[in-house]
Length: 322
Image (tube, helix red, strand yellow):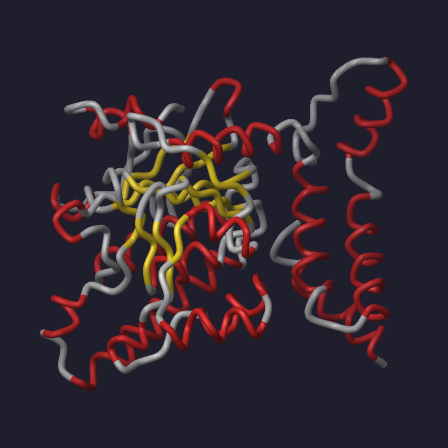
């Protein structure tokens, strides 16, 4: 029954799943380099925009890279006055951007980064939170949790580029990504216990799955903040790199990883992600059944035939996600 349940679970999910940052940080470059993701009922493509006030739309810049980097999408958080804290508007913009890429089969990977030097995301916007009525706090946290869950459920690889502090909800956002890259001097921690609350957007669940139960408890109970080197030692991030004068070393490493993923078969990568994500939560027998179900989805694809033809003809394959 477990095997059959695993197959049903994965097949149900399958129905829904069949740039240099230094340039962007130059004065005046934001408006020309990033656009806000388009709504779900409009076509998605480079240069398309969603209409907001200038101040509101500036809080999230979305860029669809082109040329050899076509298929890579960058979410750039841009709330310098609030240290990229998670506000109602940022949750709204990120939710719309996630929804857009989820429906776009041409997107091969997503990088989430900061356009504010020295900060990734400081967590919840406590100034905004202080103005909320007690009855508003729960629904807002639920929306933020749903956003981070949706980010984690994107079918393509997601990479968090942590070039500065990622605290509280900021680290929870990064934990929902498949891969995390940080600068050596970045600071990370689930610090909610200092405010007499607990991580409310997945931190108590994703951190133990990332670094182990005992270490996760230690970090959360102590509200401890670690740097990039320690985070890499703990397994919290995949790579920690020396920060450069431009403050974007983690982004550049994340972009290099996305460029490694880009030439591979996009359907195969999506199915591999699905098999890993669902399989890791169940017993091995059910996990193998999930893998088999995912493998069955790549057999009839044109990309699989293209891969075989390219191997036979000793050339680079041209995968189209078909």
